[in-house]
Length: 244
Ligand SMILES: NC(=O)c1ccc[n+]([C@@H]2O[C@H](COP(=O)([O-])OP(=O)(O)OC[C@H]3O[C@@H](n4cnc5c(N)ncnc54)[C@H](OP(=O)(O)O)[C@@H]3O)[C@@H](O)[C@H]2O)c1
Image (cartoon, rainbow, N blue to C red; front, side, top):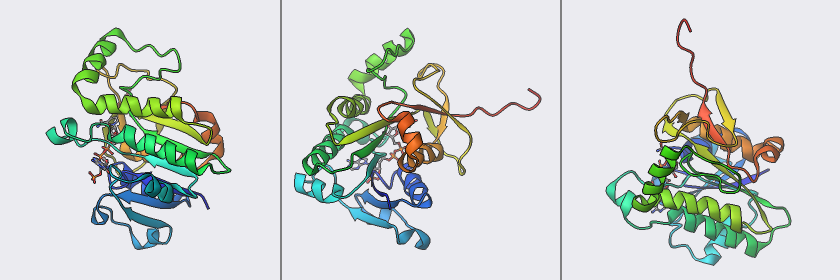
């Protein structure tokens, strides 16, 4: 059975991801700061272990214990949309978690590579390919990079995976556009790069669709081969207007 570790498991997307992974028959170690922030239904309990830990203060050996024997690590970590969340510490929450993950996996040197899947944003460019966002977007994102610490954190976390992964991992960075909440998985489209202006013509992506795609990456080897080492962008399929 595939063993997954989910970071940010109680977040708005993380909790949907835990359920999606369990539904796909993947065993989950769900990492949360407080156990009571993640409710697991009785039917999910057998394959889900809730691990209470503060990832910002975990030692190397605690990271080793967390990641020993896992096949896939998925992160839905993000900064809260409050003044403290946006401008307070830890400003490099996601980057530090990715770096600790990479260090621990490379220390453990597992025989099989571990897949690392990071939830990121369309506001971040894939610097490994000739991705050239529109000028208006580049100007605004350039400003955000300097005034909004979570944006810089998302960029640096993806760069850590892309450039410093090491020999024991494969990676995929999933880039949703503006997140919305939906109750059910709907049709969605995947692209290697954004097809819309992220600032002035943003599309929508349901958190539940992000969870569906990330869990599919963890469970479907063919899908993984398609997207590993890439930064897929995910948009909801636009609903047709009546009469159109
Ligand atoms: N909003 C958008 O439209 C949008 C668009 C594209 C991408 N994104 C990205 O999507 C990601 C996830 O979004 P979401 O809405 O699912 O996030 P969310 O509901 O805010 O979840 C954030 C997760 O990070 C954890 N976290 C936050 N601060 C922490 C800290 N100091 N230490 C440990 N854990 C911490 C939270 O745990 P606690 O509950 O314990 O704090 C929670 O599990 C973010 O990285 C965001 O940048 C957002």
